[in-house]
Image (cartoon, rainbow, N blue to C red):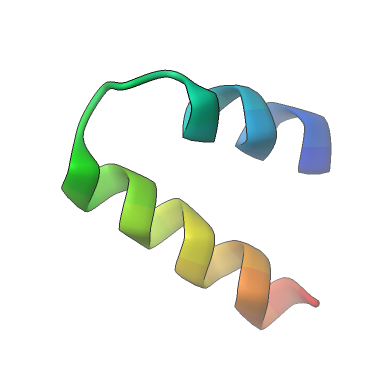
Length: 29
């Protein structure tokens, strides 16, 4: 899942989505 999250993070899709993904990654840690 980390790889997928990293790919989504690098993809400039949406700053809001980027933040959400980052938050999920931090919570999963």
